[in-house]
Amino acid sequence: MERMLADLHTHTTASDGTNEPSGNIRLAKEAGLGAVAITDHDTVAGIPEALEAGRKLGVTVVPGVEISTVANGQDIHILGYYMNIEDSAFLQRLEELRRTRDRRNALIIDRLSELGMSVSLQEVIDAANKNGAGETIGRPHIAAVLIAKGYVRTMREAFDRYLGKSGKAYANPPRIHPAEAVGWIHEAGGTAVVAHPGLYGDDLLIGQLIEQGIDGIEAFHSDHAPEDELRYSELCRRHRLLITAGSDFHGEKDGAVFHGSIGARTVDMQVLRDLSKRR
Image 1 (cartoon, rainbow, N blue to C red):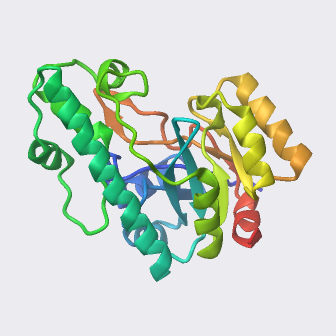
Image 2 (image 1 turned 90 degrees about the vertical axis):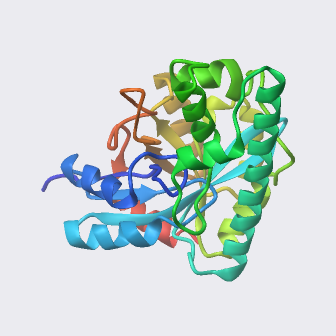
Image 3 (image 1 turned 30 degrees about the vertical axis):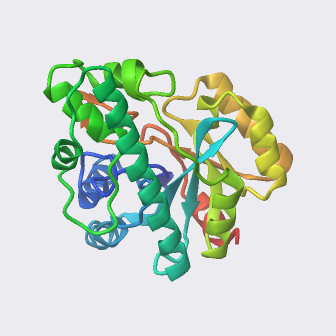
């Protein structure tokens, strides 16, 4: 029997991806995947469309989210799976996070202005082309304006010079701690997984999150080196945590796929059973 695979980390136009949710499902079908997760930043707005597309195309859609948190002065992302996406308390909490994201966008725009770059919030909103409730606007949309105005040439340059954590316009207002996000996901009936830990350079924090009840680790990610994948896989086995994998697909930007194509990192679909039953 053919082994069926799942990509558990993709983004859509509900946050900072370039494809509609149904587009991600179509790409998953074309890649021969059995399942794909929709994990937009601080929103579940894209999931209903994805579920409908999945029913039509015969692809299992895993309802997910990627929650923005801060620890030790840097962004830490927590993936949630199989939450009740109609849970009112959970939806209210996500809305609060989106308001924090809006404040962050305003701070970045102010800092860009101080650097002599004219970027307005309305221009960013127009670049994001949002048309649905609960959708998010993030740094890639600011980068798109910087590119359009000729301040930078590529998305990568925008983040390296201005928007990334070492960039001149970087801003990071107070957010919840990752352990709090884990609690939110659990309270909504979901399973919580640390996203791309190899990007943080803080394995002490990962150890603390294990003690605080994390269910799994995204060991396989498009930006992980082989040694990262081995280290986090072994850490999961040692602590009996779920091992997940995801491309972190955001669509095509500047003529290149960002971070990886759908299906670039996958796990066996049996992990879905474990994710859905973990709680």
